[in-house]
Image 1 (cartoon, rainbow, N blue to C red):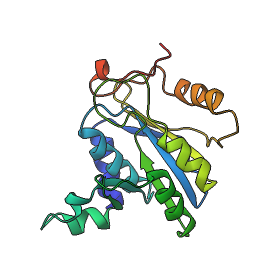
Image 2 (image 1 turned 90 degrees about the horizontal axis):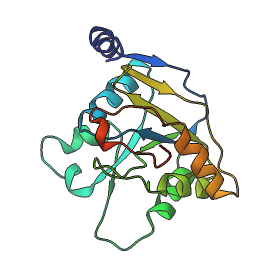
Image 3 (image 1 turned 90 degrees about the vertical axis):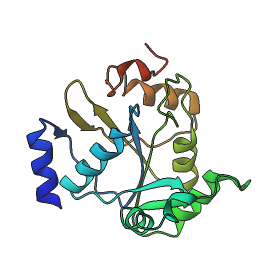
Length: 183
């Protein structure tokens, strides 16, 4: 799958910029997220650079006959959205019980334009004691940019602004749907 994915990226003019850290556990913050195509390019990139990733998905999807097993094999972590439990606690526990885990989350939490990103990725990383890997998907440059790891501090607001500034200027598939609130 690696060679095929590298071929697809090359044929479509995409390239990966940066190096994947060697940390065994991290929250991967993937943005902009403006299209369902983002999942495709994210997975193709992950295969191309041999980066095993996990991602959250509605529990119903992993129960769909014919696709559920494939989603699990690709790293899907099923979540019950109707259950009133702390997702950050659940994910921190998942990190604690895993030897290796790269959990990919989109801070926007939706494909619609939102300037006030969800902070679940930050709280999960903080509770789990793992760093955050910013991953920028820039359609204008056709680049997937791997940024340096960020370790959450005790200054959430400063961390949040620093983190969002990494994504300023990145263009999603639908540029009008991506906001950082720092423009």
